[in-house]
Amino acid sequence: MSGKVGEGVGKMNLVFLGAPGAGKGTQGALIAERYGLEQVATGDLLRDAVRRGTHLGQRAKSYMDAGELVPDAVILDLIREIFVSDPKGEEGFLLDGFPRNLSQAEALDRLLTDLDRPLDAVVLIDVPDEKLIQRISGRRNCPECGAIYNVYFEPPKAEGICDRCGTKLVQRADDNIETVRHRLEVYKKQTEPLIAYYEESSVPFHRIDGDQPPPDVEAAIVRGLES
Image: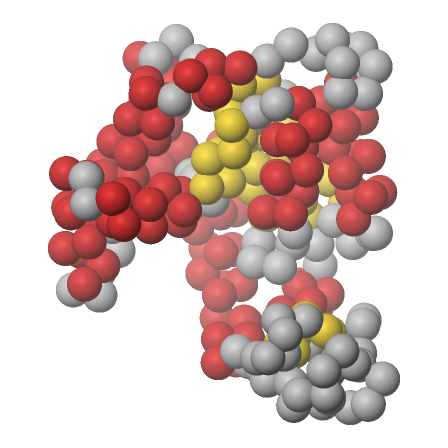
């Protein structure tokens, strides 16, 4: 893959990895737009299938309503469905939020081989744990206008008060430090074998320093993909 930024690289099939708070979704959206890729976020796929009441959506909803994880097979069927039915995906795709573990990565490889759409690169956005904890636990939201602040990096002018509308800011229940640390522990247990799996594969693997301004992270990803 070579050429000017955003030009001449052809279609790409990518997987984006990153811990909660690493900026994976944000960067994935930027890269998908830059290269005209179909961004496939599994959480969005599930919600959309449930909303539309499709066969797979009904299967997924039965697990979600029971408080259980949606099985890998259902998620893979959703991914297969969008790859087969969505012509935009033919120009390349960016998987965001899947795979999450080694078994999912192996199943995804089999699916992409069946579809003759192998991966071209895997991107890991790497951020130190303590910075991730600050990013997530420091978030404060305005329930009135939707503004988002961070008490460590982008605090409001008056503590706990929205600059825009003067409403008292709130912290999401799952943004507390204990919950964030648990989410990171789960991520590490599931994902470290996955990182090694891709590093040892023939697919180009790009480890990106995510502890820098978002435009610099994007530029680093572009350099990796176009090198």
